[in-house]
Length: 276
Image (cartoon, rainbow, N blue to C red; front, side, top):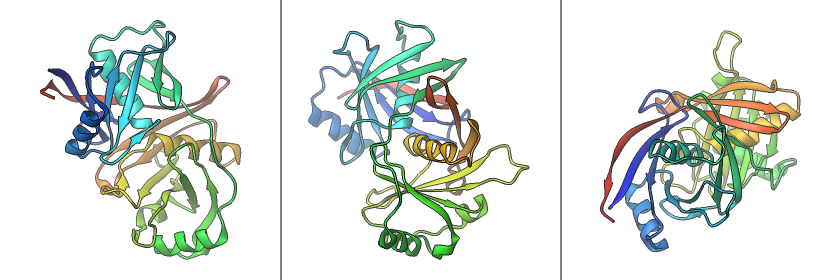
């Protein structure tokens, strides 16, 4: 039997964030068993907590979608850390945690109950090809003149980001996933000054069963780097995501001296035992 947690990430209210399944003490599970359970949960990601093999790490994490294993992902990192701590995990440093995963070591910090991870570096940046941009505009049901700017912001999942003029335009997008096949796309727009958040984001993953992601840590990390470096966002801000899916995701961005941090609240909604 394995302890099992289901965590709602990037929200302080259960059912309004992005769900994550976490299996504890999973050293005895095979890769095939992990993959099969991830297919069965059918969530965006399912994670498995294991004993670290690197002495500086507090725990090791494997991250599976229903179809592939990922080297890193944002909301699984925060949700798994929350579950590990709730189950009695004791980090070597009370203020910081070190997660070992396929992408290497990922540092997390604690600010009260909120956790934040250090954003991974971009592996691809720069302008989007004109033909790709035309395809993206057609797939989003917008005209190219609606696009304020675009950029490759790939920190692993292959993100392309578009900036629109407003959050209202972002929320109005109706994607055609047949046109967007093969793309992982983030769309961002500024909120009105009266809003409690600075930007609205949406994440479209055309080749996945759940094609719009409720709240996406990796996308927010890479978009934040782009927006801050281009002078479009302050060093610290809060972004909203999931609005069109009746979620209330909140992502806390902080570009500090020791790196860009992506944080959020998380709520453990289900705790039980898994017979696997």
